[in-house]
Length: 107
Length: 118
Image (cartoon, rainbow over all chains, first blue to last red; front, side, top):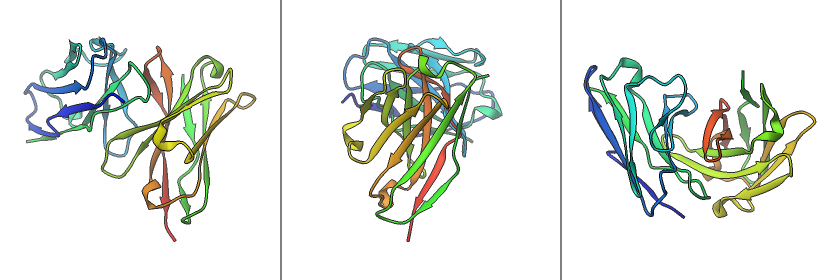
């Protein structure tokens, strides 16, 4: 199974700041990396797939980058609604595996 | 509008089984695989398995073989998951999710909380 390691596990930031979350795959996933956002009590929401492709309706302050085993999610100019948990997911093979999550909190 | 409507929360006794459903609407049910994901309270996401409704083929995470059974009813556009021999470790929220584009989950159900308690 491909292991997905996210860092940091938690992050405190202020509105207007920029943050970066990283995800490391245990092997090359050839860009098949997905990011989700999850708010408390809600289902995960697709943000980015193919490492860099923004899902329709997702604000452009979200961006993804990376290749091979290393990937990042960057959020520019944080808005109040961005404070949530974020998960990366291996899309290359089954079992589909997720990172442990990053909880983004308001400083 | 694509929608995945899951059944209600469940309180079940240890050792029992539970079946939860996921009714799809707004798209052709047989054109996409349906996946199931577990999330324990305060924890991350764990992939359980998937079903391809058009051919009734299933694939399971090895960890959930024998625990989860996935089925699909094409006549009602509903995917189902049965969990057996429940223990406290099975207390979690269970989501169904449509597999869009081949490797990502583009639509999710609202989740079903299963609580295993005597």
